[in-house]
Length: 109
Ligand SMILES: [Zn+2]
Image 1 (tube, rainbow, N blue to C red):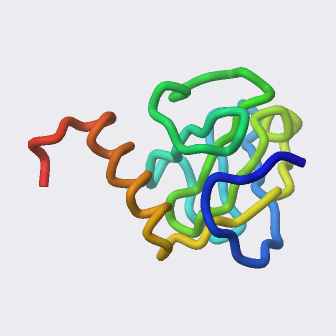
Image 2 (tube, helix red, strand yellow):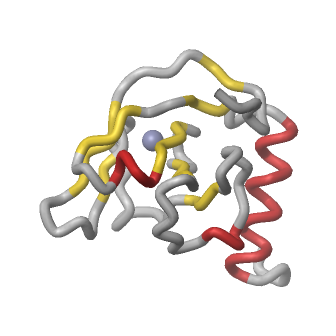
């Protein structure tokens, strides 16, 4: 296991993916139709560079609760959360802000 990029909290739960693979629903109830999930690289670091990536070694993050899923697991239909970031930690909030800026432009706020 690699070193994760942000402080973590205890994790449980799994995400479920629609049969068509279009929608993913997190253990917290947030789904990808309601809110864009974040892309994270192979080390779990949030980065817009990996957005829409299908690289199985990269990750997808639910921004609502901080659960992190492996892309490879999401392809299977049910993905067990491998970690859950502390969404209140300064490191995560900084990454969150950076991602939003990269995704939507820095003027939006
Ligand atoms: Zn979630």
